[in-house]
Length: 200
Image 1 (tube, helix red, strand yellow):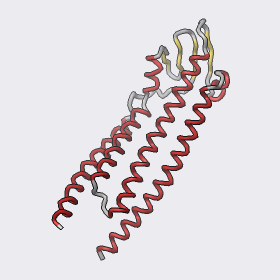
Image 2 (cartoon, rainbow, N blue to C red):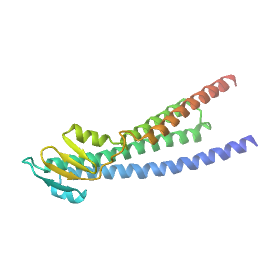
Image 3 (spheres, rainbow, N blue to C red):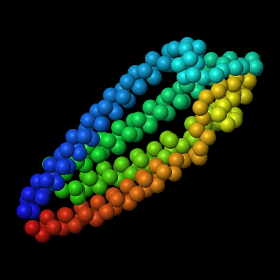
Image 4 (tube, one colour):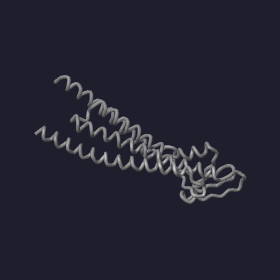
């Protein structure tokens, strides 16, 4: 009876692991496409970037607007690409956990503790990536922010969607903290598993 229950759990874990692997490869393909596309965008004229990113651009100063447009578009595109890279990392660690369960028959292994801890830290990193850090970066690089607009001090005005939220997305931060706490429960389970194995 116990062996049958174990087989059922392992089969379900194998199914979840397969689903995570599919999601990981889809996300990895998306990241590769974004990397190639982002590299291509680096060599495009600023006029095309204005249309592509649906920006409203006006300027009154003597400073050229093309550099400002390239900077804003680059930060926007690569910041969202970084978000998808972190998602791919989370899925990769999830795959590793379920692959280990399938091979070893138990979730309580030291490598799984590290994987769960890594997932927690990456989810917390999403809290930074989904916050208003890009707007802080714009400010540090000489832009002044107004509601839904980004202004360059040299007179170039770039209208774009701005987050306008807090510096950190607290939902992701709290979720990551919960997963991080779970890693300590996994560490305790791994310790008990090791003691049971040594006893046998």
